[in-house]
Length: 294
Image (cartoon, rainbow, N blue to C red; front, top):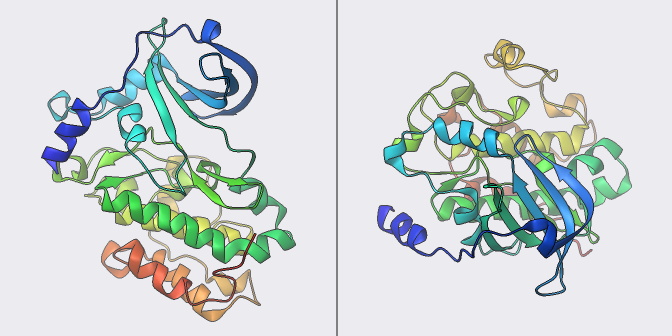
């Protein structure tokens, strides 16, 4: 693993510091995370429409300060450029702006966030939800095979194109799935999707992504969280020792196999959950709608 990380850090397709205002035509804002801004932009070098992500300088420094400098945590750009999967947004370039900010140039995906479809709970959601679950699971499985933990699986980090195919985005919290990064203490992510062991500052591994994925799947079926949504981490702590409400309470017509698969992913103890994405995907692939065409 460490040889892989060393080679990753040596493969740096960086360019000179870029004046993004001069190089890119910023067409419109298409997203803003807690640590970045994203624009739909035209790259003057290629003429292509791209998604341009610029990381907030101070917030990025604070995040990087959480990790022991001796670990040499890869940057978001270094991680993203190495990811090659049809269900993960493609990053074609990364570097530094003339203002000292990190930036990434990514493929532009015309569509919507999964969170929009979850809120709608319409016929489209019901028709495509199993296929969406499988495509998202495939992306996460690839992540884990590459020895990464995403740490922020949630609907706003899943884009759907115009045919409702998945593109997983946002790699700002990604860490290697190795003992130094599994150690207790680093509590990062989106509160309502955090696994209990992460909230409690216990040891973590790829199973925190499986928990977050199961929460997302639950929302796709029920239109709500497995627990009452909490606005603060302290509120999340209050329900981390309480089993999730059975999915069939909110989705009475759901396929029992789908419900059972999702509920196992929500087990509070990591050892009681699906241990790998491959295990969790196996029953999902057998369900009606798994291969529906868009």
